Amino acid sequence: MGLSNRKENAVYLAFRDIRAATGRFVLIGSVVGLVTLLIVLLTGLTAGLGKQNTSALEALHPDRFIGTTGEDGSFSFTGSSVGQDAATAWAGTTGVDVVTPLGISQTRMTASDGGTRSTGSVAVFGLPAGTTVDGATVPADAVLLPADLRGITGDATSVDLGGVDVPVASSTAPDLQYSHLPVALVDLGTWQAVAHTDDPTVLMADGSPADWGATAASTGTTALTVKDSFSGLSAYTSERGSLVAIQGLLYGISALVIVAFLSVWTIQRTRDIAVLRALGATKAYVFRDALGQAVVVVAAGVAVGALAGLGLGTVAGSMVPFSLSASTVVVPGLGVLILGVVGALVATRRVLSTDPRIAMEATS
Image (cartoon, rainbow, N blue to C red; front, top):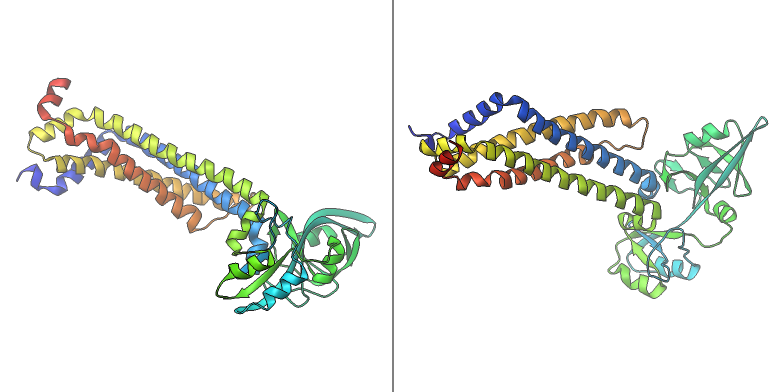
């Protein structure tokens, strides 16, 4: 039976070729694996740094954040301040069930414990007393500190927040962060004293009005989903933009490297391809042989790189802000694999135009 009718031969020849030139294919796979490893680590770092900016906002999970915009029309948490008239209008909007004021400020916290004075930077979130945030209840006239801040305060019964002495609540706040700062929870009145302002930074609206934009336009505010509100964090925007750009560069490099390696390998196999064609192999058979070989090598490299990224990410998570999940390991691996397959298609398509007579004469 001819080669053109034996599909399994393509697989056999492809694997035999890999065994015959193990070093070369290990080199190609290693480069693919290294690029995959770098992308996985960078993706995990991007997600981890993002969480350090946004985990507190995500824990609040309102349907919309309501804030004000600057002269350029852009929203920023540092520049937003929602007045009482706007709050009243939103509370009266049909379809809006609950409107909760939220004050956000960043300040220095000072604590004295037995003559020892400790200081640290903190993000202060002000909410109505009794509000639940990630399982913790906001106390009245006290501050709820996360575990890492309690390590600073020690046994101090009160802390100084922006010049205001605030008692420390007995319970512990969830481990949340905002703009790379740990979050302390206080009631809205305490926050107003700490921030020296009466108006909250934003409103949190829950419900399903027919048109969020209508009330936003009439009150001079903007209604943003939790994810969209991240654009109001300058640190998040700049960090993520830089890291995503580097990820894109690495994806491009991975595709370029795969195309370059496989193109050279395909050219070097010209005589072998010519022999196959002379023996009666169809163009589809030869192409399937070359493409299958490339996919096996790329897939092996991606798998090794992703597993290495998983292992290093597990170790790095205790030292740097690294997020380990399917979206930071599996998705980047699939991305490199898809680019690798596309690159393999580009690199191996020249086998379709290989003429057995010309190829054998050129390499004789």
